[in-house]
Image 1 (spheres, rainbow, N blue to C red):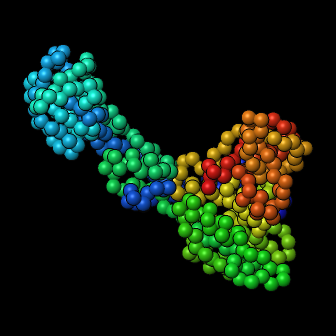
Image 2 (image 1 turned 180 degrees about the vertical axis):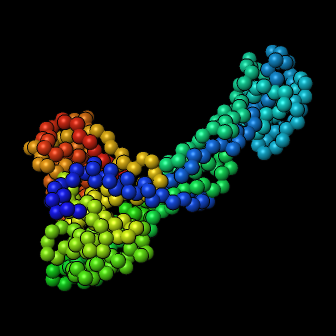
Image 3 (image 1 turned 90 degrees about the vertical axis):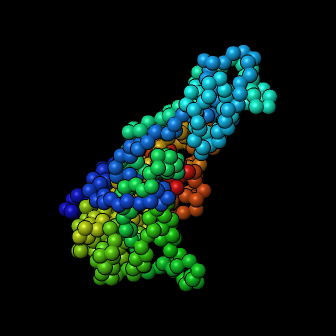
Length: 406
């Protein structure tokens, strides 16, 4: 990448489009058992191989009858008893069949009368209400018709989708493989939780945040360890890790300081495609390749790492798994605060969603520094403040709710 290109700030939308274009070329497929398919992404359309229900069945406990043969007050012989899972005999002329919810409808019956609308007298039953054909019957194929398309390629499977596939007898599905993702943190100052802190040290929170975000996507990260602030060691670690992963996610070392080595190391052993975004927090984001391995270089500040993962890495990983819809779910909410016009960077503000006088409003958290992770934990989500734009109380803002994402 030319130095002039690196000096300009790339809009988030442009960066995301670049990442998705690259990621979508990397989808590979595998078959997985249905019981392990939750959260996976279909790579083929799924069509129904059978009708659901597979036959007409009763929607109630009651009596199966031929509605055309009923006479008011005339008793009917109860000719058989049909429970779910049994195969009925044809309905005898002038009779009723005791039937239970989900049981197959006998041939010759065209309605089911609720047991509350019948009077049982020994081996006979009297229907006490008028009955219409089709009453209380679930028709064959009423839920799903054989041959119909149930789910399309690119759809990320949810629990209800798993149940739907089970209802047509699908034992396995073709899905996109989950990429092998390595997590690497940089910085001499980092210490693992549980260890005592010496002067100048901080705990390595980014690894644990990013690992948890990956697990939400069903990806178990490869721990590539912590790399010291050394260009040679950073380059060696990137080369080594690229041999065992489809993607590398680093945190720290992508800014322009003398101890920030990830970007330079990437340029020495691979290709830098993106550096510096029109984004707040998260400007020093880098993206590139080492051989065929993608590298996402996240900032070291914990809020910046969290935000850039959500905005850029998460969609790219979903695209690598075959997802057709990778964008974050947004909704519109009204601002309960005002801010002067922003600069050239689009801002993602930590906010809480609260009711004020019966109206929902976004409340801006006081601390918006990229180093204050506690404000992310307190926030309900991120409000998007476009570049060169002021916010007034009552303005509608795009809102990313954490509950919709993680």
